[in-house]
Amino acid sequence: DQQVKQNSPSLSVQEGRISILNCDYTNSMFDYFLWYKKYPAEGPTFLISISSIKDKNEDGRFTVFLNKSAKHLSLHIVPSQPGDSAVYFCAASPDLNGQNFVFGPGTRLSVLP
Amino acid sequence: GAVVSQHPSRVICKSGTSVKIECRSLDFQATTMFWYRQFPKQSLMLMATSNEGSKATYEQGVEKDKFLINHASLTLSTLTVTSAHPEDSSFYICSASSGVYKNEQFFGPGTRLTVL
View 1 (tube, helix red, strand yellow):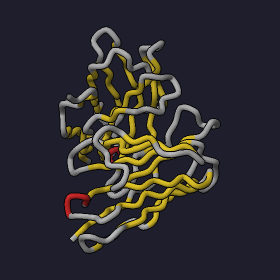
View 2 (tube, chains in turn brown, purple; view 1 turned 120 degrees about the horizontal axis):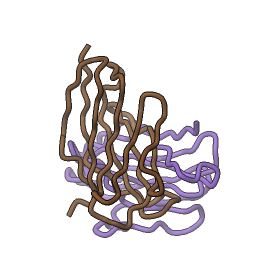
View 3 (cartoon, chains in turn purple, green; view 1 turned 120 degrees about the vertical axis):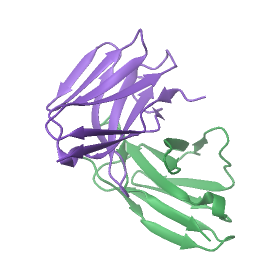
């Protein structure tokens, strides 16, 4: 049973437009959420995080929104750039130390020039 | 940011041999290291968590005698795949965290293991 779901395996967006990546989770004990970006043959790199006491966190072009009642979070990238093309993993943890992560299956984002 | 390296980046071996993968934190002391495995088009699956100087904690379904983990120092953890078989072929990624970067794990670049 997948505790963290990313239902869109892939997404294509035109350069300059907004990219919205979605993530749903089933475990109500999750309190800390992260997004990772992964290029082929490389390890994931941390992008942005949010704890359950917030509903929004912004860092430059990246904003993460959390809807705890719906057990849903999303990552917005605006404006999207070709260099954003990668696989994006959503990860969740039950503790604010954020060490016991459960990862989603990832969404492949392609930003078209 | 903190840097984690893995060696080798790619290894091809014959069935029945053992393969050792090293994970090093280059510029910080990693109190905890994690080993993940990724199958094609699937999420990262946590295999085990290790703290320096103590035995690793394995996730359910991961054979500890098959995947030997040693976290001998604050900068080095090794994963040894013993008697590897073709079904062990996968992408193995380590990550490290420390008290300084409490909320973050820093990932290595991964090791592609192919067992013939």
